[in-house]
Length: 307
Image (cartoon, rainbow, N blue to C red; front, top):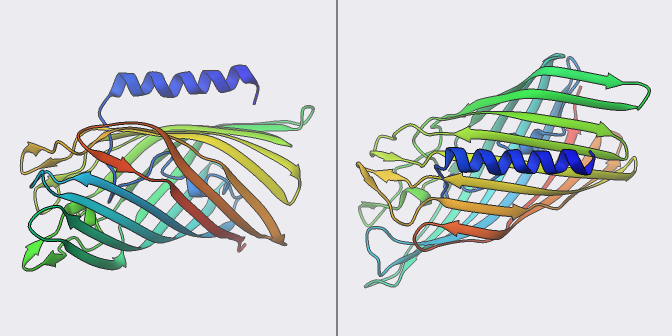
């Protein structure tokens, strides 16, 4: 991808952010970038199936909206199984199944409260419909434009309590809501250089407790270099701009805002169709509402093409 193309995609992402200006929050829906990013290398040919098992760790904290004297801290570890299948040349189907462990601590008030919570998270079904694909044999390049979309389902538990009281929504394993998203992506490949860009919008329904996560605009820009066939090094910019959450009709002060994160990564082919992956999202600029902090997100995984 040439410098002019990279600048054009960056400009598109930031213009879209300014136009939509709703926004994001750190926790049960933590993370930024493409909802299908863990599968963006999975553009399987017809009939191919790829499996991806990824471990993810992140930390976040925020001032409690119920008691301003309390700070809530969250450490979250997730294991996500991703299955990407290409039933047709123009379609990829992606199923994501997360298992999540959350350690939540609320301190600063009369006492310190803590919960350790684990279980199946919100299962997500998504896909990419390729509306344009082109292969240039003379330049040995490929490019594609796709519509991405999907929905997360309220499969994760969201009724965890402590001393008879339901704990903060962001400490729950599940959201208790449906989370549809829709966007567009572009991919350019001409080894040893490859490029990827996407922009999407995600919303959530109101859960049974009257809680609704803020609408979010998500984007990813990535450049990848393959010095040899078995190694790929990537660098990217992931972003999220989300609106405040709403609980029982009231906007929550310490939710939502802007996150920009650098996203370096590496993929190593260790044997045949088996790849090891590692990536980190490092927030370098945040403009979060109220008092919030978001730490780096660490990801490591293994990919295998089954069929």
